[in-house]
Amino acid sequence: MALTRRNLLRTGWKFGGGLLAIAAGWTSWEMLRPLTGSGVKGIIKLGSPSKFKVGTATFVNQGRLWLSNADGQYFALSQKCPHLGCRVPFCESSGRFECPCHGSVFDIAGEWISGPAPRGMDQLSLTIEDDVLVVDTSKLISGPDHGAADFLTDPKGPACVGNG
Amino acid sequence: MVSNQDAESGEHLRDGLEPDTYPVPEGPWQRMKHTEIWRSVFRHPQLDTPRGRALQGFSNVFLHIYPVKVPKRVLRLRYSWRLGYIATVLFTILVVTGIYLMFFYTPSVNAAYGDMLQLRTGVGFGQLVRNVHRWSAHLLVLVVVFHLVRVFFAGAYKSPRQFNWVIGMALLTITLGFSFTGYLLPWDQLSYWAVTVGTNLISYVPVLGGVLTDLLIGGTQIGQPTLLRFYTLHVAVLPLAVALMLMIHIWRVRKDGFAVRRSSAGAFEEEATALAIGVGDRVRLLGVVDRESVTAEERLADDTVFAWPHLIVRHVVVGLGTIAMVLALGVAFAAPLRGIANPNITPEPAKAPWYFVGLQELLSHFDPLVAGIFVPAGALLTLTFLPYFDRNPLTESKYRRVAISIFTIILVIGVALTVIGALFRGPGWKFILPWQHWYLEM
Image (cartoon, rainbow over all chains, first blue to last red; front, top):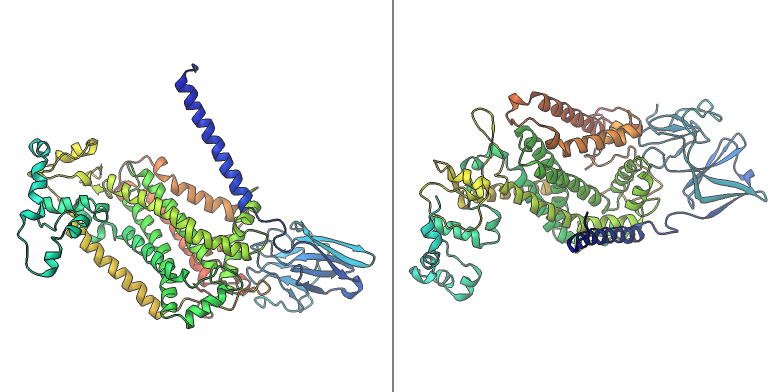
């Protein structure tokens, strides 16, 4: 392409238009992306592990999470169902997590048992420091894939959802 | 035919329509029409002559939306069932009722639900206006879908209307966006969980799903940023987008010669209705004519009628009928309002809005990537670009059996999934008969 005044201007317009589009996109992204610190994020101290008995799940409203004790191992599980985001309650009678929206069922460690959920319940980073359970809600760990059944046991009793 | 004489002597047209040349009628109302103020607003008097009607159309911004003359076939109800027009009327109703509602609504998680209660009990006709807004929104989705189905079966998406079909698809998508963003605003349990389920569908988009969901809801969970974003989209961004798209859509309906007319051979025939001129009519040359106008000039018989009053009166009747219907619905059925949104209590079951519940049903059977992405995105893209790969120029159904069969099958599956998801699913998404328990709320 010959370097004529017309070609130079034409290319200049295209280049300038491209730069303008990038600037608009960048500005929009910076303005519209979620603000840092939005939602429930931060460190939550839950006290001594001995407070949480084997086979129980306790809801922690501050972090909107479940703290479960599966055979002596502790899990901080996100309350959001990995299927479509419904809150998954713990069913005391069956000892399992049962999603009321679409029927996904998880064991006490959040491992997938049945239903349309694509994986087990997502987990939050959980450590024990000086005999205190510490949850870091900013660190979300994707739930275990289908097939994980390390903590799967028979249901304790009848299910809560759909009475199935 | 266009008369060169008329074109050359443009003065005589103006002279012939000067208000001073008409007898001044009796009565204050008629005298007012002869004042300078009136004449500065309405440039041409209501003359019941072809030229008078044409000039009224040309010189009035509202009448100018219509062509001066339309083919007679456009007047038949069965021609289009007026679906596009009804959708426009519903959109107008939504704008008007929406503005009323905005006076009483605060997009805050602490105030929104209270505003809903206040609207119901403390504002005159508040509940009625909200009901009409709600039912109009649902009807709009339904009517736009019917419009799409009719256009498909009529083959009206084919050349030269390909791009207008694409604009129509964009309008359908925006309509769904409108309804979905409005769904959250009451901030009750129904809206909170329907939007939770709906926004989580987006998270299944490969790679970008998480970012898109976070961008839409303004965080990791539905809350104040989500409400404000949905409100802004609902009252500012989407209305502007609709106004722009609708303008192009209606303009192109005119320029592309309304919907197709079938010839006896089933071939596709063009018409330039905006410039359709019958033999014997005298019309000034107003601009450069295009290819289609030449076709129009060669027409022997005049099969057109004036849009005013023939088409416009019909539109007024259909518009009033639409308003009457949504008013009746608003009087008979209250828009639902459950308890205030509570992130810690999920209703059993939590259903997406009815137009997305088919997708939710699909997701309960197939892998999320298939049901959440491939199927809906594939269907949307296929439909949008349908006119560009359907190379069959014929519009009559007997020549389009394959296309019509495929479309009908997809349509039936879509309707069936929606009906099953909406009416036959209970807690835990277990199968339930609708007469055992009705779980659908709109």
